[in-house]
Image (cartoon, rainbow, N blue to C red):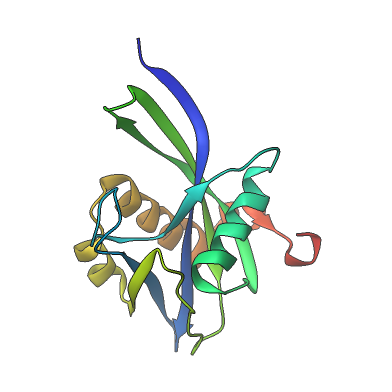
Length: 158
């Protein structure tokens, strides 16, 4: 019987170019043992006694060198099965707004980045759950619906 683990976080980074959102995608190393050369959002594992929020901020900093101006818990959980381990993973998704013109400093996990439109990001992303997260971020957070106010994590309290 499959087990369920909730120890992965994902962070969708965006900025505004004028009024239009731009999303930062990262391309995994060509030598990565899991899904090499694929485009993705920031992702990583919760370590030790970290909270999901702390782990997401750590992964954001480690993979891009960035810290957010504004930060949200996205009302969406990504799920996937790791068939090798027979584990269903549930990952919390976060959204990070950074200033326009921000450039990431990539870790060894990635070798390329692209700031892209929502449509372009949907073309590059491999996993349906990440595409769904992008749609939810755009509709509920970027467009400023009530969910944005209710799920924002104050930057000063991180």
